[in-house]
Amino acid sequence: MKNLKTLGLALALLLSTGAFKKDNPMLAIGAKAPMTNYEMEDISGSSYTLEGLKKDNGLLVIFSCNTCPFVLGWEDQYPGLKELSDKLSVGMVLVNSNEKKREGDDSMSEMQKHAKAAGYEMPYVIDANNKLADAFGARTTPHVYLFDSDMKLVYRGSINDKYENKSKEAKKEYLREALKALAKGGEIPQADTREIGCSIKRV
Image (tube, rainbow, N blue to C red):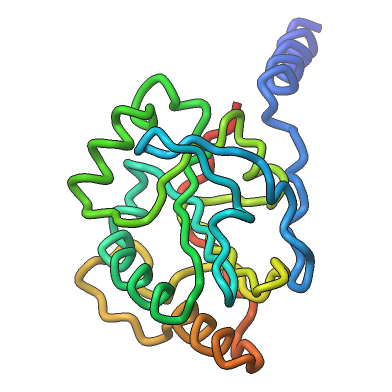
């Protein structure tokens, strides 16, 4: 009986902390971006919406953060992706949805410091209460979503197959190939790849 009571208490605790919360379904390829007019505060003090950040050929959204080893292993590619996106007339934004760490490692001040140290030149915004991440079904940092000019999803998943290993040379440039195909109006060679990273720290 004592063991049953202990099990019941443990189950109640897990439910109360959201451990059994069902993940929101991931946005499907071809689906329209949700919450395109949702305002998010940038590290510069400005506010942006997805619709406002979109350029002629679309928008690249990457869920990111300050401390995940996978982000740290990939973020040296962010400047190059920004340069390529600009060249192809695609907007780019980094979204920090780690609401559970907003008073610590993923606070606005820490985001500002991290962006400066890492040389970010694209908007880096706060997704308050992880609303956008929930609407997208985003799961990890990083998690990539690429939209066309109509804000329809054409690619989701990883940047490439390098993952968190900075010394590893990527053999498959999933995102770069998707960006180039999008700009040419062609079919994305591999539209859905596995997202790899740290879990988004939701409230």
